Length: 299
Image (cartoon, rainbow, N blue to C red):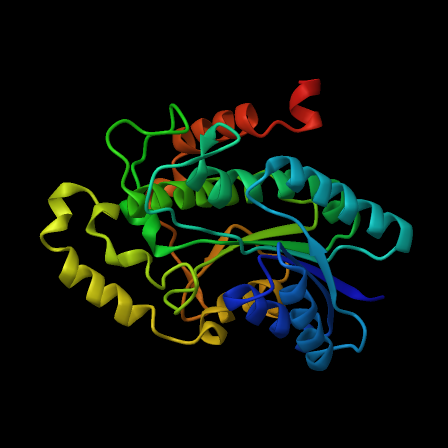
């Protein structure tokens, strides 16, 4: 039976390299993105790397939760119609916002980096469970270490600093990932976080030049920190995609779950805060309030 994978934000950068790696491993890969032209180019490369004609592009703006819901409906319907299992979901989407903005009335970084992959995953759980053994891979970031660890509300107290708020949203998603792994234990659905380390991507190019993306105490040091960060994000996207590919395909991970696959493509210890049950419960309450699913409504 065909192995299938969905990769969000998969038309360029780390997402496309992840899709190419999955295609080379024999998966029929669907990439999700906003731009149809880039999608067509991605599918052409995917088909050259793997089973001919098995690449597919689905258009969706993952910053819109309404479009995420429509995307989940489409993916679930396609797999139900074809009878093919959904083997792997890679939530690769991510974004950093230098200036404060909202999407649908909710702070943008929290939407894109957590609520969007959270909602897509929750809506596709029946499809992934039906296709078990299957895997969910959520792309995380080392920036989780700089995010505020307060989740009483979508927006933390204090001023807006894009780098820290990005880290906070990624921390929420990492806590969710580990919590989800525990929830799904015994179902045949394994859940992993993949840390790509550094790579030169559209998100990092030009984003880090404004010292206002960090809190005032760090601004005097920011030129030094930024240069170090930029050196660490100068590697190829193909190398940064390896942790996601390993998490999705490595036979050594069969039957395992709740692991963080680090930049060297080996399991690493998660940030301790992400394992805090109270933090995970606060993230779950926020997620259910701002990205409700039919299950939440029934509850």
